[in-house]
Image 1 (cartoon, rainbow, N blue to C red):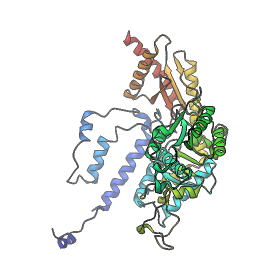
Image 2 (image 1 turned 120 degrees about the vertical axis):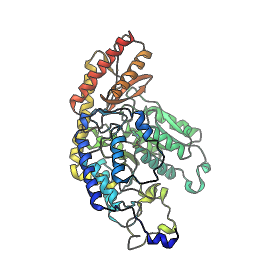
Image 3 (image 1 turned 60 degrees about the horizontal axis):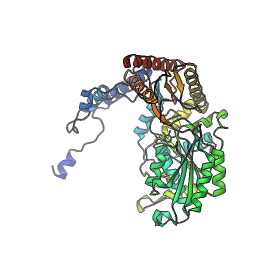
Image 4 (image 1 turned 30 degrees about the vertical axis):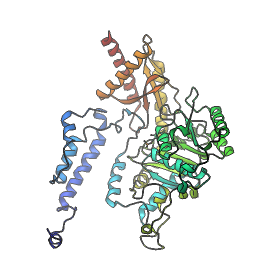
Length: 491
Ligand SMILES: *Cc1c(COP(=O)(O)O)cnc(C)c1O
């Protein structure tokens, strides 16, 4: 076809028949709301059958399957094999649970489909408002800057990048890390999430510049070791630039001595970043603020809305006290992005200049809608509920002679194991591994695992608004039953 012929047969992705699309949309809403309503009746997890995996390896479709056909394919091959994190007995890794309006809000955002990198349109103001609300919720001043990001990993990367640039003492954007007069060192506990190391590596500092400080019996950073390490590094001519404190470690939910770290950082003129991926949200409950004391004093704070705020993936946030330092780290305005004083090209200082992404989705909308739907008080109660459930599970474990806690419960994470007290450590590790896989494959419950000082532990991280007390009774009863079964088959 030549250009003229193409123009004579112009096409679009809009539906040929809007009524059919509307009907399909209604059906989807109907199906999805029912799916959420009945989630408890399904297994938490089930393996994908080989036929389904094969179906998901077909080559790219050239011919149309139609909206209806594509949806059918989803219903048959995708929907029945979920991660399971929306299920009431899911407590794996640290995953949020989503909600009905959360799902619908994704449709609203995708319908408007704005690019929230910048320019003058409503989505920008929605994100600015959501950021202001986050500051208000977590005790940060309104003068702070921030950005919604994909999650805690990106929030940590942005916080650390601002820290590096602000503390380097030279124009690192221009000169690069090679121009540093000494090794730029970053400090965190050995329990810190892997995303911090990834960020340090990506920033060109090298993982050996990440000083991993040992933890105490409660998995909190050993503060005196931090002081010692910083002093030693200074004596060796290195440049300590940042300490990362944990508000809720991924393994056990431990909270580092944030106030002590913050005081030290102020004295030493070191940037203080807090990784509060899920734990920062415990700040909503005033009785938890003592444990989190010092978090408000951080220079930057990373946290997730898709974990302990139960919002749909993806939604994380970084807040930074020094707005200028934040802008200095990322602002770059080429000719085609120059801001104007009026029109679409106007608007507030571009959000793209606070991070790495230029094109940005409207993830602020779900946060905005969900905070409006429920109000912060509801989230406060749910977070308390999850903490109370963690205590309840810990109590069940402690009351049972064949179970034991493997770490103290500081927040909403419970690490425990089956231990009939007559097995070697090696066998215990293996039996508990088998119990976990059985819990998953039988669709009973989805805790996951970790290893603490060589001990394999079943780990329940409770960021689930659908869990009820009896779900933890099920977890405990089934763990014991599977443990007993395994003892029999082992002979
Ligand atoms: C989950 C988690 C992260 C990473 O966040 P993502 O949202 O998965 O990118 C970082 N730190 C801690 C403590 C976490 O629990």
